[in-house]
Length: 84
Image 1 (tube, rainbow, N blue to C red):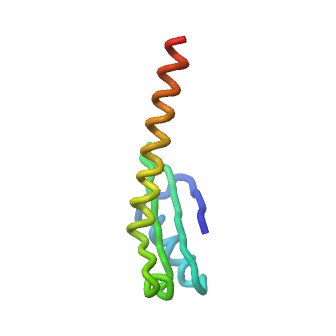
Image 2: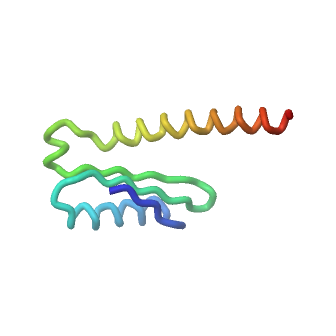
């Protein structure tokens, strides 16, 4: 499950993730929110998938890497558009 919620601080995002995880039989949860101009992500994995080697921290790391690449591409695109 991937979901974006608006204006939730990190604690509220974690609490929402815990609530969803408690109702989810098996799965992966990724939540994001922008709060006070800062984007936050929470990733959770149910125990059965953690036991199989899936790690929530690795998911966040991979998401962050992907977002960094996107940010660089947007910056380059913006420079090219502004220069022409």
